[in-house]
Image 1 (cartoon, one colour):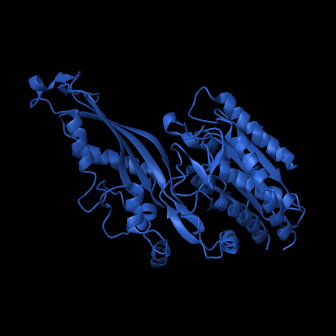
Image 2 (cartoon, rainbow, N blue to C red):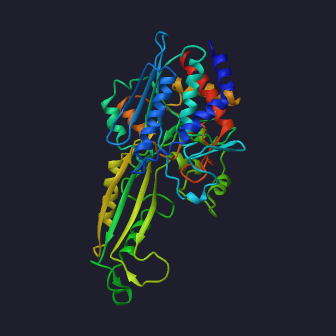
Image 3 (tube, rainbow, N blue to C red):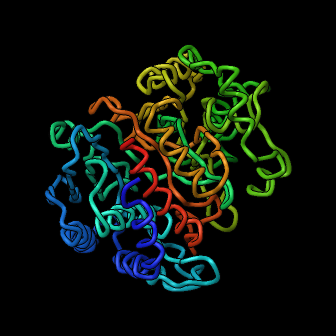
Length: 457
């Protein structure tokens, strides 16, 4: 392929420069959850804008939204009938607390061994820089084999509240043949990975009310139904003993796993012991009839994310609380509708909530699952690129997490997303001491260069 070797050589010779660029972006504390951090968000957007301009992109714009800016960049090729790829990313990061657990400053990139430590190193400034430097390597030695567009948002870590509206307003601008989303990762440094499915999300707050105010548990206990107890009873009945969710109609739209998918998922080099080691639990749990890998990526779940009721401080206080609350999330699989799941939970509560309490269900957020055809030419182009670099066929997995933008792009732009990335399961994403495995990141840049050339074939 024309100029491929030159681009790969450029990437190898400029590896340290690439790290330096990443460190510049990591130094900007672009925490989207920080209401006082608007200037940092703007600074990060301007840094990305400047990087696009330095690479002589044809179009570079910063679009203001009701929240943080969206940065857009576009570089065209003169090659006829070239495909257009849209690379998605986000420049915002999670808060750094608890700060005392960091071994180095969270917004100063520090290399220890094979790892670069900083907030955003893995999620996902490192993944964006890998994509940008793959483009730079090609442009510095020739012409792009395809048309490339970038869209970078600054609100992914708070649920992307303004991105869907931006997509709907700019469908012509974002028109493309395929989306590349490098916001996922690999199972291990020696296991190249392609994610072809993501679970959706339905998130609720369930509030249970009892007496008009907190009561003395000795004076009123046994006469008034404790909201905390009532809430726990409701939650306990949401699962059957075999791990299935008991909400009416919960599984009606679940797409069954084919035999070929089950075979592919069970090819993943992850064992029950690996899950035990990662979690520290004494024993695994879940829906009967499915392996842990299948449960994590291809089956829906219901989880309690938080509970509150009564006195929870140090010491004793004999109170019968007036109020209890639970945060409940459900990870959804293809064909499940978040609105139908909300309706299902409402029906369950009407059927099972006792008349001794009042309840309120708040629908906080929802997003559909997404799945990409593993046989798409673009997916196969990425597969060949990863195999060229790692020397082995990549594994395909369905990720248990949710990336709502993937579903939005399928719905609004009418294109599938290829999910890749070079983060590791132990990169401490969203936690103190977030890190990026630099040898894998270096290989990732090489793979992205090869992928762009493969797309042009």
